Image (cartoon, rainbow, N blue to C red; front, top):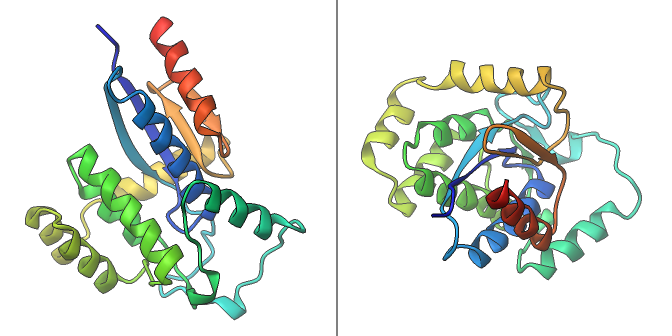
Length: 207
């Protein structure tokens, strides 16, 4: 009987490389879906912890990028069928509330699907996914269970736990994402091709 493969996705939903890494992992999982059982969950990380709760206007957002990184990213995204439209993004959000909402979803498949929806809303539509009302609208559109929506809307549940996880990952030395932790032990950092993930799945089954 094949062993379950548990995968923690240490990601920020406003990180384009995380969006790309998630797509490669999803493709790899599809290739082995009939062979291995997977349990996948989003784990929080703030790529830009200095961003205020209300977000920051894109034109005021200052960061350093390596020459050509934008073109390379867009080419890789296109190769796996992802659309990224930076022109639509006006606000660089603080993603803490998005992470809290994902944390409150008890079903792994629902969490994975909603995480993907947040990625798409931000990178293809330019929506402010740090805005609580935007997140609620997305949840209602996607059919998220009403219990989780209610917890997110009326309480601050999960906030301390999410912040504790972010602190934990930074203390572990994780300073960039995406990160992929397999079976609570093996950590792979950075974007991987789907073929590399498939090989890793196979090795885990033989371990």
